[in-house]
Length: 640
Image (cartoon, rainbow, N blue to C red):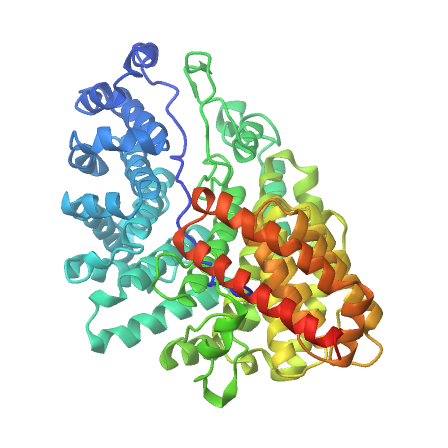
C-alpha cells in the first residue's frame, strides 16, 4: 500500500458576492412554493423585466444547485442558455449573480456538466466579458471606468472563476475554444496593474491558460507556459506577512482621515463590526442571507465555508488582503496540478502493495526509486519552474502565518476571516511541497543540505505548537509532505533531523485523526522510519515501539485500507536486519500476526465488497498474500 498519487485540487464552490437589499419581497415569499420544482419558477424569473427579480432568481439558482441532485432539473430546462445572456445584462448585480450561478453549476456538477455547458455555448458570453477586460487594459478611459468600478471588477473575477472551473479536466475543449478566448486570456495574463485584485484575475487567467494549453499551437505553448509560471512566481513572491499589516494600517489611516466627513459620505467606511461582522460570519459557515433586512423565510442558507472569492465592497484594504491570499492559494493549487498526471483520480489514494513497488520503479533512471508516484514533469516545465525558484517560493509559503499579521487579524473582527485564509495558504503550500518532492529531482531544493533544511522546517511546523496537531487539514498536508521527504531521505541515505521519538509522537496524534488519508500517512511514516532504523545498531527498543504501534492499528482500526497500510509498514520495518529480528522476537510478532491473519482475511471477505472498490480489494488481497508469506519468513527465523 505505502504509496500515494499526488493530490489534485478542484475548484471550490463559488458563492456570489452580495444580494441586493432591494430584491422584491414577493419573490422571497414565493420561494417556499417553488421548492418542489425550483427550476421551473426560477428559470421563469430570469425573464422578468424587473432587475431585482432577475438578480434574486440567479442568486437562488446559485444556492440551489449546490445540492447536486437539483442540477439535472435545471440542465433539462436549458438553464445555461437562459443564464448565459444575463452575463451581459444591463444590471451589474444581475451579471454578478448570473456568473455565480454558472460557476456553481460547473463546480458542483462535475466534468459532464462542464461539457454540457460548453455544448450550450457558455463560452460566448464569457468571451464577451473577457473582451471587456481586454478593452479595459488597452483603453485608458475604460481602465478607469471599468477596472476601478468595483461591481464591474467583481463580475470579471466571477467570470474568470467560472472559466477556470469549466476548463479544468475538460479535454473536449481542446480545438473548440476560439482564438478570441485565448487572446483575451493572454492579454489579462500580461496586464501590469499592481492591485491585488488584478493579481487574482491574472492568476485565474493563468489557471485557465494552463487548463487550455492543448488549444495553443506548438509555437505558442512555450510562451504561454512561460507567462503562466512567471505570473505564479510573481504572486508567490509577494510577502503577505508584511503586506497585510501595511494594508491594515492604510485602512486605519483612511478611516481616521475620514472622521471629519459627513456621516453620509462615510457609509462605506465603517469601523470594525457592523456589516463586516456579518461578512466574517459568512466565512465561518452558516449565514443568514438577508433581503429587505430580514431572513429568507426565517431560514438560514448554507454557504460554503471557503468563500475564496468573497470580497467586501465597503473595505478597500480588506478586499486587497482577501484577493492577495486567494491569489496565492490558487497559485499553489495550480502548481499542485502541474505536478500531477492528467488522471482524474489523482486526488484519490493509490493503493499499491509493497511487492509491486520494486517492479514499478525498476526502470527508473539512476536507480532512483524514491519517487512516490511514477510521474515526470516535462523537461521544459521542470526547467521553467526551477528558473523561477518555484520550489523555494513554495517552501516559504509553508511557514506559519506571521505573528504580526495574526495579531492584527485577531484584534479586528472585520479581519478575523483572514486567519483561516492564511492557514489555508500554508496547507496548500505543504501539499504543493509534497507533489514537488514526488516528481522533481531533490536537487531542486538544494540537494542533501537543502532537504535537511526542509526537514528542519517541517519539524518546526509540527512540533512548534500543540494546537496544529488538532487541525485535520494541516495534518493531512504536513504528513503528506513529511512522508515524501522521509522517503527521499531514506533512499539517499541522508540523515534526518526529526528524531524517532518525535515522529512517534506525531504519528500517535495522526493515527487518532478521523481522516483515513492522515492515518495512512502516519503509518507510512512509521514504516519508513522503522525500515531506516533497522539498519542501525542499538535501535531494538525503538523498533519495538514502532512495531507495537503498527500492530495495534492493524488489529483495531475500523478501516481495512488503514489496517492494510499498517501491515505493509510492518513488512517494511521487520523485513531484514539483526536489530529487526531481535525486536520482532521481543514483541512476539510471529504469534501476533498469526492470530491476526484469519481476522484480516475474514474482514476482507465480509466487508470488502460492500465498502471498497475493485482496486482496493485487489490490493487488500495482495496484502493478505504478503501477510501469509511474511508469517512464513518469521517462522523460518524462529527455527534458526
